[in-house]
Image (cartoon, rainbow, N blue to C red; front, top):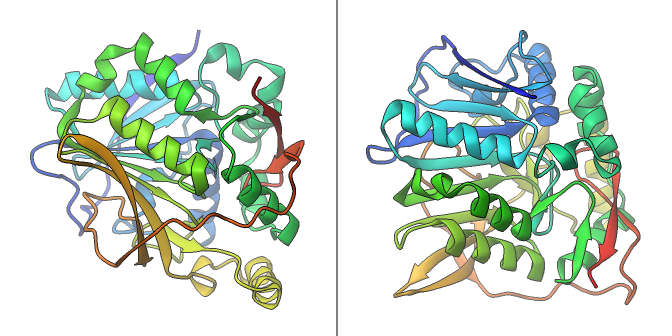
Length: 345
């Protein structure tokens, strides 16, 4: 049985607001990427006002238990392995504080329409999650080094290719179906969210393509009230020491740009050097119907409170299809891991 641990972390106050209305702000992160932040913070100290400080795994944290900590600013952080653990922890925090959640951030490695972490304990211990378990139980340095490995044009093409399909499943990921099943088992999770709750998926390419649109729209209609909102990124996310404002954005433009950015990325390990304006996907109600929209010219995805929607609204353009065949595997951005891709029957 996995344990659940609650601690209070003493930090200086964050300069940015961490409450939307009277509700809670809860940061959640899977263990592997939390280890990256712990290692990154040792190389370049984040400081108390840094947007990624709540995502640093405490030195004493175990890797076989979900950990919930209360931050000095009143927000919470949940370090988890599975979707079930994260949901249960959010419900427990809401009950303990007697408040609903206004902002919920979900941080981890992403793919179109899904994130790379197990849905439950059975999946966690399955063969398909072997690589995820290795990352979660591995060293901080291993997670840190993998984050700064270059990505190839072929990797990007495969990610874009699967983003325009709706009938596939990737190994050890949680997509809309996994969220639907988990919510059916835990009805209290939806009740813990405020009527105007915002869910921010702070991760690479979760909102990309048809798969990203289906996921973003589906999560909103599954969990949120009429004033709620879901935000995902159609680009690759950036979140190291050099991005204190929140999650930045990057994407492929040309072969020359990719080569130069990869060189800078590996040598300098500074996300801000390659950051670009990003495009986010927003799901919100229009009247009584849930709809999605794309907003360009974004500098960051805010993590400390509700997003202020600015920029230019754009319209969907289907990503170029490079092959009719679904790739057998696809690289998980921010890692050197390739996960299997299976076409749904």
